[in-house]
Length: 276
Image: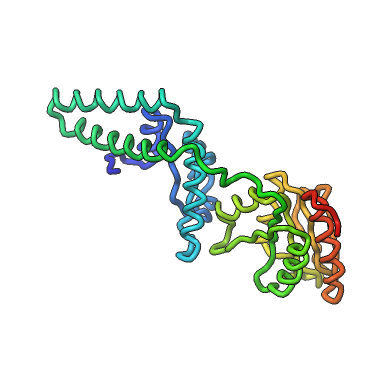
């Protein structure tokens, strides 16, 4: 949609004021927005904190899943925002714009009518597909496993043990420096969360931090209220803040199988399957 506003945020807020049912998605660079947070979210733009966002840095390989996740959120948002009455109101406003356009023979009003009519058609298309399938409902007996992709052998081992207990294993694809909407929604769909916190960076004292990715995914699991299991490799002592009542299992490389068995039993307990 074309607009003549000097600032994109002015355009967004003017549309939201006229048509509060419209859902906007911000196509931004997440890192740049965070670096300039004091400016980007200043004043009225603080509302952007609550808008859906789509990261410009998403790779082509992950573009589809990330876009699907964002659109699912928008459609679910619309499913409760838009009622038959509100859609009728939008149609009435478009009719009035059309009358004004013909009476005043105004190009600007005509442009607004065309834009509004286009919005109505898109909204009707969304409404026609409601009710939405429960894509974001928690999947029974499922577990999200967070791990460093360099540790695929560890993952393969724990996945086999979890599958043997009847658990569906869910993972995430990563494409940039922060977790995307698609990964967060996969964590949301999972019944519980398991993180393989292996060594990432050596610290000055000789101990290790784990991957920032794992800390972000754990943070998402905390925010979503998921039961959490941490498998922490020997000498990893930075597993993030907000320590909670989590099952924490420490292991050495040679003792991984025993630790994995314990984690699988705990996961089965969290999901209600029970131990073997």
